[in-house]
Image 1: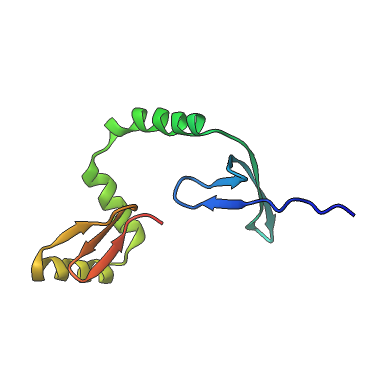
Image 2: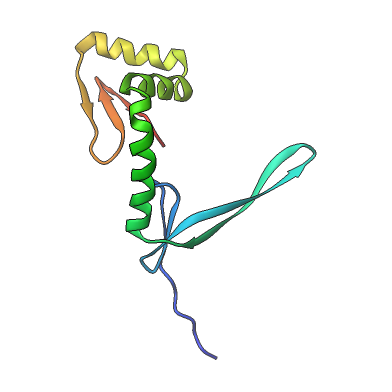
Length: 122
């Protein structure tokens, strides 16, 4: 009986659903869905081999075309409206009123606002 090698599998949750198997990147190719009683159920994700250059080129192509079509203010407003309730936003506004200190967190798109933490994405 032969033992198969144990593969190292990682999912990078910060960069568009990348899957790494033994260090080789795989990108999401397709999601298989099924409707049951009118409700969509996600059954599986199908991946294909990718590479860092290809992935970066895809992001760059899209960002380059859409970045001039909106503003930072519009993006931030829409993210806040989608992610947080008005009640939560009022709490952040109170923290800003108390001491006004806002610090960007390293490694993510999040902010330390007074004593509170706000994560914009994820």
